[in-house]
Amino acid sequence: MSYWKEWVAKEEKLLREKDNWRTLPSSQGTAPGHIIRDAHHAVLSFASNDYLGLAHHPAMIEQAEEALRTHGTGSTGSRLLTGNSTILAELERALAAWKGTEAALVFPSGYHVNISVLAAVTTESSHIFSDAANHASIIDGCRLSRAKTFIYRHNDLDHLRQLLDASVGADRRFIVTEGVFSMDGDVSPLPELLHLAEEFEAVVVLDDAHGTGVMGDKGRGTLSAFQLHSDNVWQIGTLSKALAAQGGFVAGPRALIDYLINKARAFIFSTGLNPAAAGAALEAIKIAQDEEWRREHIARQAEFLRQGLKDLGYHVLAPGILRTPIVPVLIGSNTQALKVAQALWHQDIYAPAIKPPTVPPGTSRLRLAISAAHHEDDIERTLAAFRRIKSDLVGFDGTDEGTQHEYL
Ligand SMILES: *Cc1c(COP(=O)(O)O)cnc(C)c1O
Image: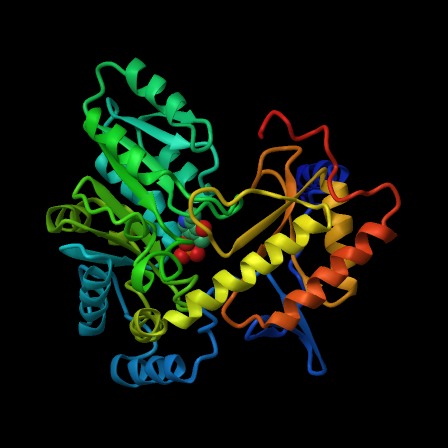
């Protein structure tokens, strides 16, 4: 046996004991609103981040093909060397215009953005204030920065104020939050948060991965949904979710973008975005602005699902001030959440169990994300499945209370 296999096996055993060992799901690919298990078998999917239902859109594919023909299959180098083609500049102009900022900068992924922006703007004397429900890539970004990080309770501005009050001697302050929280489906209270930030001269770093294309007028995002504009908010987004392409971006003042070109290591030391992804993203930005019906359809279906699940007695996390396409159904333990997910799977519905460390222990849940590709009868079928699960699963009445109170 190789000398490393023993500790790998030990770690695997620990995860398996907690029902927390992950494997890749078997799937041949996706179709609008579905995943394809095999040639004859499509499964209704609520796991995708393709909110606007664009991943198979003919115009998207055409623009990706066009970009490939013109710019090649790869961008061939770092943006600072050979990887900077006109299509990326065009994409950055389109993103800035859409987001209403002076400039934008595209990265190979949203993850690249989050692991490098905070590190690029902080020093050892800086303080970062990070929402407890922030995405793993933000957590990694805080770790990679040399700044001191303070975690405030999810969306709890009183707690944030206490931490800001106590933070003396910081040279720079940053508050980092998601716009739409991916696992809770609620939004950050941005008007009050920005007010607080400005009082303490802190920059708000807003990761709107799940708000971009989905929230606000023309899908401009959560900041726009609150009708806010400020140079003190730096917007981060991804091209990989509602825009159904791949890549990440920062949108903000020109001075910030020029600075990041010099300082963001994951931008500098990674190959420029693939031309096909840029072509698709450009088309998606157009569709997101032109086709309001996609967001209206999402809102209607999400409300139908949310209300239907509540009527069945499930514990749906409250969306808060603004509605989002994410409907989280709180279950509690990993074991019970997995059972519900498996029971849905047996009825050809894919709504994965979300477990720690993605969410806090005791708050395992099913996360259902509505897409413009879902139809009303898809939701009806899903509600019928949830109804059956409640009567079939022994000892299960919709939620596994008792383990979750610390968090809620
Ligand atoms: C998905 C996600 C990211 C990462 O974006 P990718 O483009 O997929 O790398 C960053 N932040 C949040 C909140 C996300 O949900």
